[in-house]
Image (cartoon, rainbow over all chains, first blue to last red):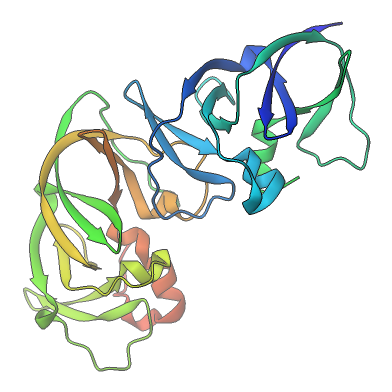
Length: 135
Length: 156
């Protein structure tokens, strides 16, 4: 059964997350940083009087050479948790079937979308955060 | 045991701002009892980081923790000691700034490391954010490297 996904760019790579998890796309804003021990979190954003942790997916996947974000994709991990993911360009909505991810792929990859011109990995933000590891 | 802060998102609170290196932190203004210079520090010179030494308050010896050492902040030599009421730990900071008014928000659940012990929440004022420091949350590392420095019965 087809579902809706939001595809977002991280430099030349494109990834996707389930559309129902995405709440908004906002311009780059100030990241407030402080000492902490949670891997993959860069700091926090202040958005509409709420504090959102910044989950630096690009740096987790590509290391220090990751491109800088131009926007923040705001996504829900759960009913009470949202994160901001830096993305390098505008996003698009697609409707597609999700195929199982190959076993050699990182556990934070939920599956693969087979689109007309490309294959896009579907990312589990909550699993990436809880694992605290890069893909 | 992770500390659960008592937060009221809509209420305004007063905070004493302090810096540790290039990072800003906050203490609840109503809880700040005293800010001392390092002259008040009794150090044998053999203190193991993050223990800076001890200071005496009303006849009681209190350990003073170098917060920069706990957080891994370099080039952040402490110059002041912040003492809170109802706390048996002094916190060494680089500088003390001013009292500001702002909101106190919970630390997002995505933060799952030792910072949940270090901070009671995040203060928000003038579009800036500073973690609200919890002195007892700095003790676990101190207990590991200098267990005798921590008075018995000090909760963590």
